Length: 215
Image (cartoon, rainbow, N blue to C red; front, side, top):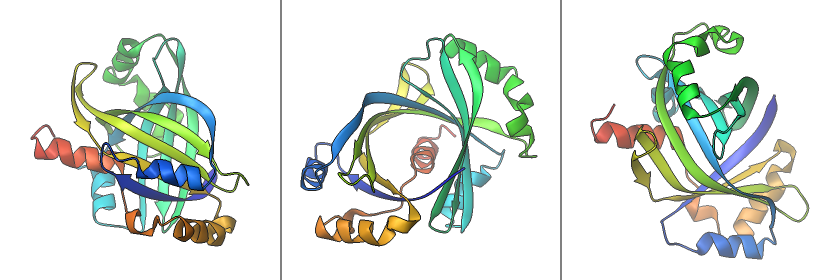
């Protein structure tokens, strides 16, 4: 299990302010840009969404995740917990799927809920949302701070052609607890304070779908 702190900074589409932060912080790209795919699961009453909206101190998200095209590649089950300011993430390999249709069939026929990891949750879950976005990866010179830039977020009503597009750009800082003082000073020095806000792709996507009477 990985314990870390995260801070998110949200920009409007077309903004280039986050690029100045990357330049002033002398960040370097660590991985090629790729597409992140996440299918979220929740209870019948969307407990995980409402725990987040209500600001509960302990909350979680359960999702499937894979990268780029699902072409004989690995899909993972992830549980992401928030306990106060600390983020914890567990990841388990679900399996290799030749394409999205095979994965979708696997979910629809309920085989996914026979997975030991989900059985251990002891709660009935259902597929709630499928989101997809572009992600870029950067790291600060001293390797104390990682940054991801997410944009072009699609919320699928029916994959692959029917979706809503979220036009926000989300910059996320990820770092170890012992580096929190240095990171906070770094944030102030680079004038990021006023953009820090609570933002969950799952929750914000849920709200948008709910406002459009899809959920």
